[in-house]
Length: 115
Image (cartoon, rainbow, N blue to C red):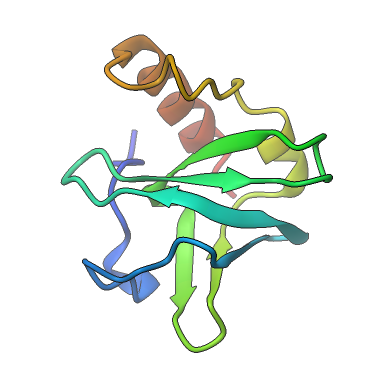
């Protein structure tokens, strides 16, 4: 498994960049905006507010799904489809912190779904 929890150096992500509020685009369209972003070494992720797209849910995306961060247009491109994101293990903001099993399940899901 690749390290799903680290930003790809090719993504143009700059440590310390303020990306909360940026639009998030899947391969096949807009999925929401960044509600939370972390950059802890080996455990970085984005929490994306999907708005009305999947009934106001939030999804957690490992940093390894990020293809490009466009600071000028305030947009983040990810290398997964809307369907892959919609079918991901459900995100529970109260359960994910410190839950190694959830993190492993999510990392495996997104690693397997890599296009």
